Length: 289
Image 1 (cartoon, rainbow, N blue to C red):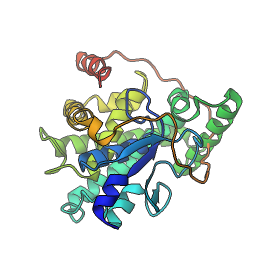
Image 2: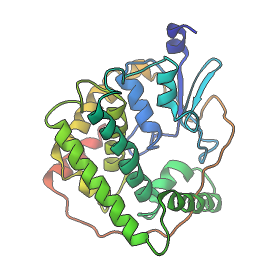
Image 3: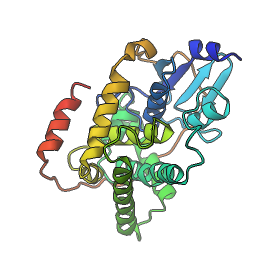
């Protein structure tokens, strides 16, 4: 199929907007940013029918569909199918590969842990279950917590140790990414899927988690990462947004086969901390994003 046809008819199906973000889903947000970085025209629609589907996000154009739970995810499918590839100059660079691995494993695990296990579940309910009857939402939440614990290898016996490991790795990753970024606009010479995944992580961590978030606290220790997120959100997610995302719909116009994910666990409260002036300034600005 012709690239022009793909561009003209392209649709991204994601979860609804939340926390001042175009989509509140931590998996959907990097894909949205990736397409923004590529200046790729697309329509954004929201699927509220199957909140626990592992297929979301997915992309479609005519008979072409790329699902989140197939072939390594949507971004990988878009690259392999020749639709849009931002990583051509970087995919063989050892440092880029190691940075990408940290973001997609250590930081992804930290988001997953804090969203489902290391918090009271408020953010997760907002993203996935806010439109469902309380009892159904509670059941889905508990099921997903159970799945996340299994995926992260968390048991009653090792829960504290695994939590410490997850946050330690996140702090190491933030330090390495902060050093790599320095005072540059992108982690490497220009935007790539690495920036899309990391920017999505930073914005979600800053805006979706409460002030008591241990992950947010660790991130806010690196001022250049906060400035990086602030600038890229302004440059790519606000400027010219009407040209690539003409309308936000309340429901997806297309359907997908339901493949439920899972949930279950006891929430933990974390001690409240005092915010710095830089943190307060960023939070005030975030209201206008």
